Amino acid sequence: MAFQGAVNATAAKAIGLWETTFVVLASGAALTGAGLALGLGRGGLARLGAAPWWNLLGGPVGPIITAAVAYGIRKAGAVSATTAIIVGQIGMAALIDHLGWLGIERVPFSPFKLLGIALLAVGAWILLN
Image 1: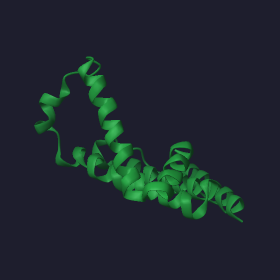
Image 2: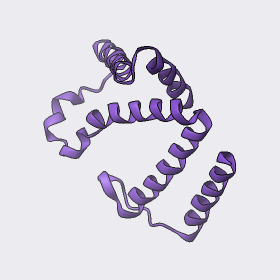
Image 3: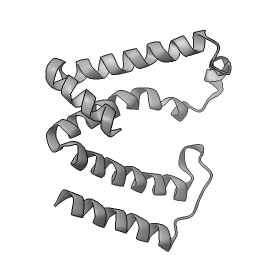
Image 4: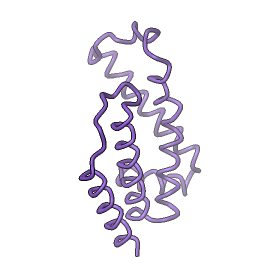
């Protein structure tokens, strides 16, 4: 994430944030399409309509995340932005696990997980100060 975010941040400075996001996602779609054309998929596109609606949120959320990472790195620097992203992602992952959201099997939160997240937050604070 730090590498791609830094590349995207400098590209956004040169051509614009949304233009960079478009190029990143269009080239990713082309590469993925080529992989499917080469038979690397499992034929699951035919079952797309049977998937829960929220399984498709990765598509519209992807450009927002891509743009936000590039913007954050450009404004705050790679270490600061990546640290904030990782701590935020781990917190969200703990919530998803604990509540069993999005089809994930429920994994209850524990005091040790809370301690781990707190230590990550302390480490993040040290990195950012």
